[in-house]
Amino acid sequence: NIATPEQHAALAGLDRAHLIHPVAPWRRHEERGPTVLSSGHGVWLQDAQGRELLDAFAGLWCVNVGYGQESVVQAAVEQMRRLPYATGYFHFASEPAIRLAAKLVEITPASLTRAYLTLGGSESVDAAVRFIVQYYNNTGRPAKKHFIALERGYHGSSSTGAGLTALPVFHRGFDLPLATQHHIPSPNPYRHESGSDAAALIAASVASLRAKVAQLGAENVAAFFCEPVQGSGGVIVPPRGWLKAMADAARELDILFVVDEVITGFGRTGTMFACDAEGVQPDLMTLAKGLTSGYVPMGATMMSERVYAGIADGAPAGQPIGHGATYSAHPVSAAVALEVIRLYEEGGILANAQRVAARFAAGLAALRSHPLVGDVRCVGLLGALELVSDKASKRGFDPALGLADRLFALGYQHGLVFRSFGDHVLGFAPALTITEAELDVLFVRLCRVLDDAL
Ligand code: PLP
Image (cartoon, rainbow, N blue to C red; front, side):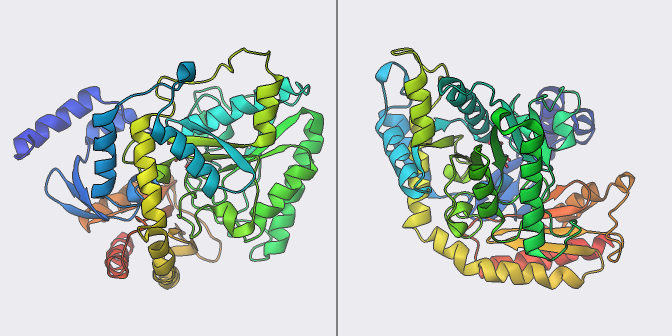
């Protein structure tokens, strides 16, 4: 019970003393203590001190169906009651896991015919890397061990995925990236010399991939990993056509094309998957977040028949492919995922996301003239503002100013949750259920935050 300020202080004390927070400055967090969230409904959160907050980031860009969806809760409860756990080992399976795999194959691009169900995005990426290594070993090309990804990319924090990630805090002190992990420039229209020339930016990205493969030798390169929109790197939205061009280049270069749709999957960018907007047919796809809308943990590593068959047929007959976990294909998570996908498709949630996207884009675009805003980026219900101290030179802010912390505190004060990347990019990814009236509230509050930060 945390009804009184004393009870809240006691709980915060336990947090400081015992709970290690993910991706946090541990000692600084101990000084500050937590904001304890206690309940949520739709896009609204309430914290333990009774403050109501509009969650403009859907948790961690995952609660796509919004908080408090009763049918999702029911799906979990019913599955827990009927069969809370079923292993996938020893030929066992559960009905929701089987149905979910089939559903994912149905809705993802046609190239993907098999689904491996994981515990979240990091494990989906880690499994993809392990499966790719196995694929080349089993198909007689064991030298193909090098992986290429994008600067500013984020692919989770498993011991291999964090090396594909190209954000310094995920490498520092962890001896990453590995010698087999390489990065090519991020396709950032705001920061690239080609500026608004989309064709030039796409050509530059393709040229970087080709040059990196040439440098390593195509016979040594396994795969190229990318996010269709770079999320944690600062919501970097490449020009339309970029994803297809990179997929085509990877195919030509004889390396696997792996698309990480952990954020962009399940309607975030306006189509069910970002690949759909450009007709991209990847070799592998990693999923999580919107798959269960954050109600329970689950992810998926989707693969093509070619990759599946290469692994399956190249392994010694009858021997297991040694990858799996106790909670792989967890039946409660699978039951939740099936209901969440039903809501996207039949509950009108994907349609709502498409309907309100124009209002979201207009709200962000209106802030372009704000003195702090250098760039506005947006696709579907995924957006960002890049703040600058000088619009002409695009100069950012001295990290010593602590702008991100200040903005976060102002957000709390004005009842708005968003995320900052580095010190100067604010990211927005509200639940796909958000209404136009709620978007209006979001932008009124955001204006107050920016004005107070001046
Ligand atoms: N890949 C991308 C693109 C992500 O954004 C994330 C998480 O933010 C991950 C992978 C890792 O997912 P998880 O946090 O579920 O492990």
